[in-house]
Length: 272
Image (cartoon, rainbow, N blue to C red; front, side):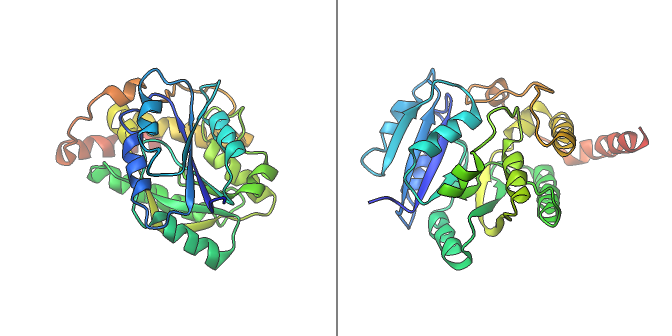
């Protein structure tokens, strides 16, 4: 018997992070879901770690011949059997009532596209403030013709996902936003889920630098708005569990010491 939800997780060298997410899934109050892991021939023990959960969940590991996020998600969708597809990244976390709450939303609202809110699970104060600004921007964007996603973590009715053609595999970054905007062009509005969060990591911001990452995201946002998708490698952006930025340890951020510096940079940006 098919499950209601297929949880699709693309992986690449995620032996340290994937087990934490799988433990979250194992603890779900509602078990009406399957897990489809799409691994791009990881060099570590990602697949071995996944198979440790074979006895506790309906879980499958699919091998991908490409190390490409959109491709892996689409491949997972083709192997999925659930009525709804939930896409998660391997370093995310969810609460034990997430699936239960999601199914409640689906039963109550009857939408074919849902977006759970994203909350950083390893954020410092400045990160939490930044996240809140980004969340407000995302909420507001859904009143326009160019809506944005909170990030990876969208939920699609499976056959509608097929109808959309899945994630655009020519996209360099922001494939999550591109597919939401493509859906809106077809007249489909996403249902926001403000009280059913997925928790994501701010490690890229903390290790690579907040302003550097924000400058990349701003450039990608402008490119997306002008061209409809980011189909060019407009900056460096490493993926996978062994990306260089993931191997760095975030430094302590002293708000008092850096507040003036950040305000100066903001003023210079406004003056340019």
